[in-house]
Image 1 (cartoon, helix red, strand yellow):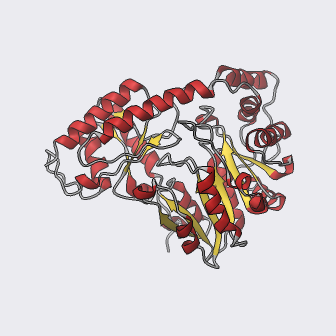
Image 2 (tube, rainbow, N blue to C red; image 1 turned 180 degrees about the vertical axis):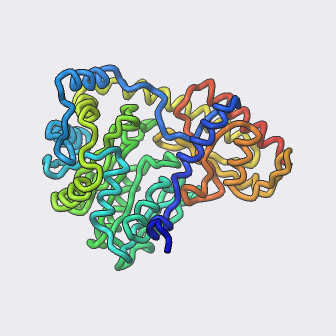
Image 3 (cartoon, rainbow, N blue to C red; image 1 turned 90 degrees about the vertical axis):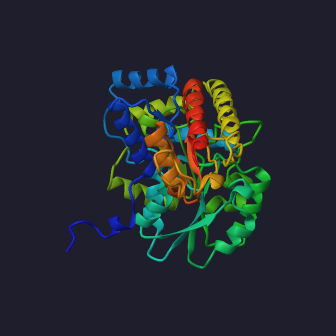
Length: 400
């Protein structure tokens, strides 16, 4: 009899974390590796937010808090939803977790039973299917192709819904593609969902503030008020506020769901860091003027990478609406061979050879449920991106 849980056998470790760790090991060994695998802004947390954390420590705000967040942070979250999304919530409808991932996981743990299905558009964030599996549900991946700019169509959503469907996980702008759904595109999806009242919506809005070219962000319950009572709107301070290590995510939804999520959290991690919570209060309530300059830098980097990758024979790279990722296709490179004799059989072989032979770390597309692609995170300096793209171009040119 195995000592480890059979549930654990259903899931795999995060590929993005594994590749980032591998790149770090090679760097430590003296290799000049450029890492484009981590989904983390390279900007520092704004000073006013750091000052709020220091002030909280000085004021002795270092004790346990309510399991799912202090009232001051919940009030700040409610104000944010009202101000930016036109959504009205009360603090009892808000849950604060240790990062956005925990709020998603809590909701799945609180609601899924064996046989319950969760629709997940692919390419998807690597953790969605495994969290569903850990919670006992069945992930149903639906491929959104390059031809639709990696966006799910209403017809695909309609076809995927069954009597067993409990959740539809929606992520815009997307990790890994950066694709953002316009209000019109989103309304077409919500029209489908309105015809299926047993399906709940889990909207992961983590990249809300990272949008370009005049793209206007919208979230499902905002576009279709009829979905308000069966939507969990999830967000956090990690990406837009450059607070990944602070580990604060949050979600708002129907009070009975939030209460169930609180029960899960109370018996697992309990409260997020009290200091991080006070920093998040300042992030949401304080000045937002840094978001614009950060987005200007991200857009410049996006354009640099898209142009460089599209110039490579055999590679196609769409221009995404947001986040800080691109998701190029390497369809034209499959079957070729590297100078060291590695056959590019798939995107995993491509990413592995790129790291081994060109010292560039990217994440292979199979990890996100759609091949043959790879993900580039351009949340790093222009200089590093320029050099990385030159290495990728040289590597691809060397294939025969």
